[in-house]
Length: 228
Image 1 (cartoon, rainbow, N blue to C red):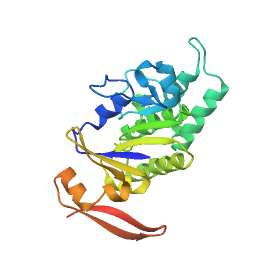
Image 2 (cartoon, helix red, strand yellow):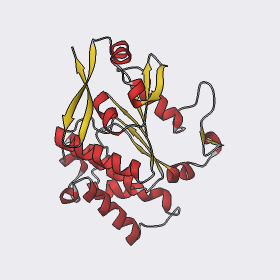
Image 3 (cartoon, one colour):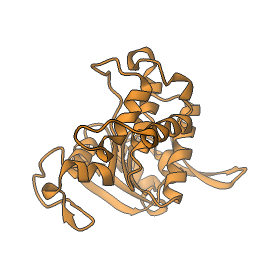
């Protein structure tokens, strides 16, 4: 699992959209399993990589279950309707994110945080072996952030490849194997989490003095980031 950190405007979302083939690359080449992504069909990409965008308002009043069911689109034929397996995958994803009780609610009738959880559930329903998550904990309260990070860790441990960006270094400490620090469109550091998230690197990244401390938890010693 690779976590991307950087201040606003550093290029995180642009990088992700380029990697997904949604924006043309200005240089270099993006490959998926060794194949240039620009030569692949969109359905083929969607079956291999699920995308969780930043939450936004919807244009149509789909129910949350209908929205999550869209994650199965890449597995269906041109005119095929979702089958029982597709509906089961959608229901399971809603349950995993703790929003199954809201399944029939319209997208416009839930909070921004609940909409974000539905976007993550939609990605999980695709059952893709890789996930790209653009600030998946944005708009979420502390409890829902913890739920999302727990799900991310379980997916990582199950062998799903995950690329995630966040504004919170503590999230990277909790779940990331490696970290990319991005500023002004350029990589400052790409290394294992403990090597990348040093006080010096984080201070340089955010232009504020930062200290990395260790705290005792029930699960052992954990590193946290503190502004000083």
